[in-house]
Amino acid sequence: MKVPSLGLLTDRDFRRYFVSTAVSALGNQFAILALPLVAVLTLNATPFQVGLLSAVSTAGFLIIGLPAGAWIDRMRIRPVIVAADALRAVCILVVPLAALSGLLTIWLLYGVALLGSFCNAFGLVARQSYLPQLAGRANLIESNAKLGGIEQVTRLAGPSVAGQLIAVLTAPLALLVTAASLAVSSVSILLIRRPDLPREERNRNLWAEVLEGLRFVFANRLMRATVSSISWTNLWGLAYSSMLVLFLAQTLHRSPGVIGAFLSVSAIGGLAGAFVARRLAGWLGQGPVLWLSLLVGMPFLFVVPAIRPGWQIWLAGIGYAVAQCSIVVVNVVNGSARQVMAPDHLLGRMNATVRFLTWSTAPIGSLIGGLLGTAIGPRATLAVAAGGATLGFLPIFLSPLRRMATIPPWSQTTTAVDRSPASTGSDPTITTSGSRAG
Image 1 (cartoon, rainbow, N blue to C red):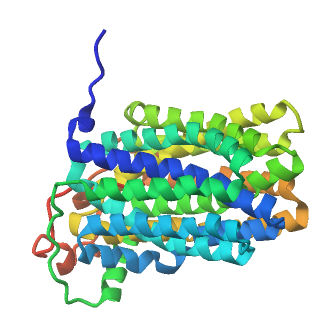
Image 2 (cartoon, rainbow, N blue to C red):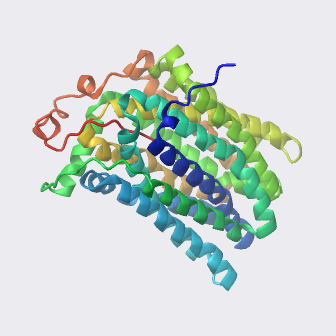
Image 3 (cartoon, helix red, strand yellow):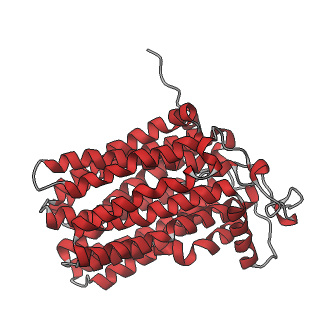
């Protein structure tokens, strides 16, 4: 039997990055389930309070997302990743300590989620801009697929384990796993031996560089289309997810263990998406696979609000899995596509700008979910949000990407705006690395 090639995993430094991604993703799965359950089961939060918690958990991208990219373009990237994971671990650790001391409140939970989102905003943009040094542009889809695959494995196993652990330890104490995993992730990045590419001193105004990133993204019509599509999908996706755990816990009266198992079943779809993304992109073309995945997958979100208590929860898990599969395919293909559409010296600002634009709708969507959940109930909110997410394919479908088999490199997709003196080969800060998007 032929042994499959390990590819990039034969590289020691990439393996350490891979381990960092794996353990931090596992910890995140505990947090995704435990934080809302702390609010619902421990603090008896209302639908609006749960929606607000989801909103502040992503508010970092809205508040500091844009300058984060310009700052990162001025710094050595690896220390930023190390610090972001370490500080997030400290933030998360506050919740179990407060619970043990009897000081846990919904306001403290909001504060932890907000500070964690700031660290996450820096960490994710830094990771996207650091991977080029490990993988290179020629290996973008492979590296994104491998990292996306391990993230989906953690989504498959993490929620089920988290649910059982929450049932035994309670939700606040289960967050100790998240804090520990982030600490391990930080150390794994610290052990990478390959030096960062040097960053030259910049005398330009910070906000001028932020605007340069914005101009670059908006001047590229292909990137505009994907950003519009993902921003819209995130808006309604976060409205949906903000009410999902509440719906399962309060409306269907499911235990933490069952909710964790539900999320694990749905993660099978995400794992499948990571494995088939590369093949689908080659078969259908990079442009068509983006809008077709959303068009086919998003309507399956309607299955969850249609179910009743009992065995139908597993039918809903399958429907949710199909939707997750489509989202991961889009993430892998789109992440790789926009990496080739940006020059190296703009990677941080491009990634931060895209993150800002696509995730700035997330806290808004979470607030919409909380308000709708209060007004019409979690079940109806899930149905409305599913309808909104189903329309997310339209910006890509109405763009040149509709029939584009291969995404051209940045030098072929930029306009005169992108070719300003600060963005050409004469800029001394240009490097020769690839990039990674999440």
